[in-house]
Length: 544
Image (cartoon, rainbow, N blue to C red; front, side, top):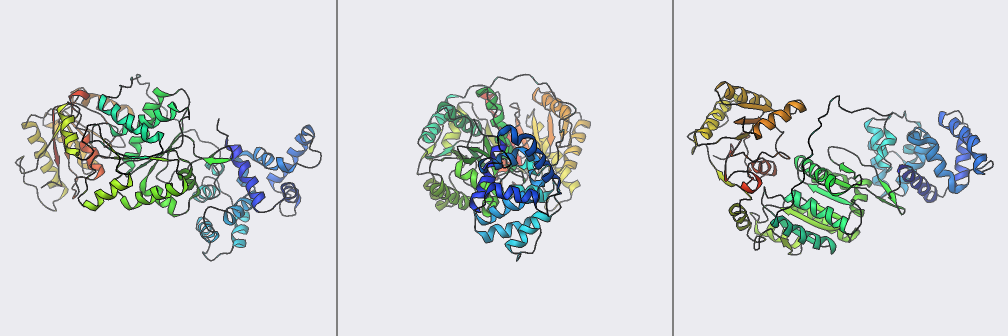
């Protein structure tokens, strides 16, 4: 069992006492009776608590050194950092004995408290004691992360963020992996058993995420390790959220134990746990490459603990950010040789040959594909899966092929008119179910309205669409009651409508292979075996 947050605090306090060569009881006694803090609310509370429980524990007039940390942790609870001497104790320890140099840690503390960068150690510690502690502020949360304590110690009270309504949705059985996915899963587990490295090559739409998540979970359960110490890195927020949802959907079918799934991006923090006197992050950590890179660069101790304690590392779209991915693998070689690394990609062959060679070297020339020979020929893999009905055949069409002349640097109204022409051309070519990604919320709403008025059932979704209404619209599209479904930044990942036979992307882009575009296109590439279509027409405005 993992130790709770109280143990994290106790370890932190004991480490501070030891590293700063402080006698715990002497520090506590001096603090509680010093002229500076004797009237402080927390001092009064702790003195009263000593009187209430000291005799029952046989302490006499002194708290034993070995019990001081536990006394402070239990006595102050979530108000621990409201007590100035605790703040100064922990920040002194962090700066003097942190994971980075004293100079870097000092600079980080100055940034958190907006102090001049040339401030001395004494200046920072004094400021830490005297600051007006305001829980739930950015500075309080950053300070808590800086000293490596769970974020709840920097928050004010608790808030009830439960929504006024939630949907009771029917339980959906999790379909088994198909043979080609099971082949990949077995090979991934072999890699995990050996703490090795593998590059998984699977086309978009063939279930890379599902297969990788199943593999990690099965490996840990097979070895009775519990679901934890998993680090998932993805190139974009959308891919991060897709991974979070995949873990959630699969874990409810695979374990009866609760599992923490952390969204460690967009500035979110993580609560560290302690087991056998070692810090680690429980459960599954999903983070964006950019955010994790910045946290490591800035000496974030939480990120350092994640890297040092993870057992399974999965890097989605690993062909991107090659320089940094190479650094991460080298860091794991130095600091955590137990960690196995799985890279995921749909496009292992890069435009530059040397990049392909680097990717192969990173994973020790060990590639895994659902199809024999697909490791070195992704097109072969894609073609076989299309033939087997796993994937729909992607049919790219340009504006000129659809009989539409696109203008350059056009106005929103002009692009709206061109989009209507593209969509009606789809219908003329026999499309029955068109998923469209608009360039803006405004364009999406207008397209849905115009096509509906033209007698073609269409609806629009954006982040402001109420949950119940969103579910109803998606259900209607899946059921064939809508011919068009428009959205903006909603249905890029985690959305499944197998009957989609055309996808239109109206964002102008110079890189049609970027992850977001690939994810959008992938919504329409479910083949007949997945309840999808034989073919899917694809239009991307960036394609001239």
